[in-house]
Length: 279
Image (cartoon, rainbow, N blue to C red; front, top):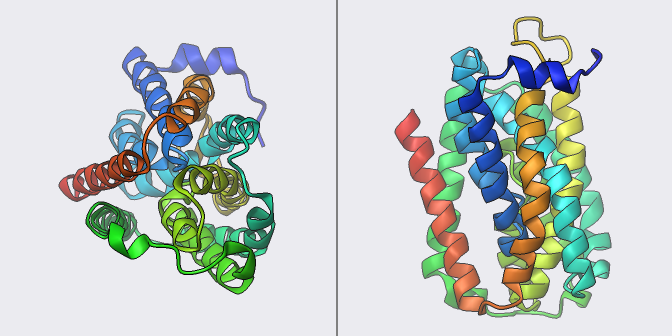
């Protein structure tokens, strides 16, 4: 890994890119705390705009956007998880049951994602967001609790594996799947958001490490790229996201379950539209 000189990175960056990375971090931080989604739904689409400006070849844009998104989520999720923990919105037994599947799924997803084409990843991301957006907004009646989460360890293990795999493929924290799944298993919306935010930290750690390792031998990426993680974007986004995640977590305590679900669905659909337009 090369020596990291943050000052030289900042000096070499275009001011437009700096502004875009900082604004992305603000939005991602609020969404991470409010919806428990890790911010990847915002980070990935915006990075697909910024990375070509930074000199990335088109075929590397999506994989670097996803790897960098997961790396930013590590920092955002730490701040968001701590805020939810203080409000007693994290169900730790559920986190422990989800952990093994999340870990293996995230590592497998990153390994597969680093081998896939830019177009496939963009289509997969867009379809994922569109399906879950429609389900979250119009399929709420199917989210009625069907069981006590404490008696659903088998379901939690399978959900964790699937969530880790897909989240690592599209560069998100997993809240878009875990939130509805935990509500389905009996958790109220606020505790489901807090728990999914915590699980997003686990996905981001293992996923970003896997993308870093997978791209370690790449030699034709722009300067300050480590593996498939672009450091200027990482530093710019986390600079503001960690500050705004507590604000989002505080917001989640004041809004109704219906509003939280509706906002999540709208965010998903907007991200899907962005990815399909960019193809």
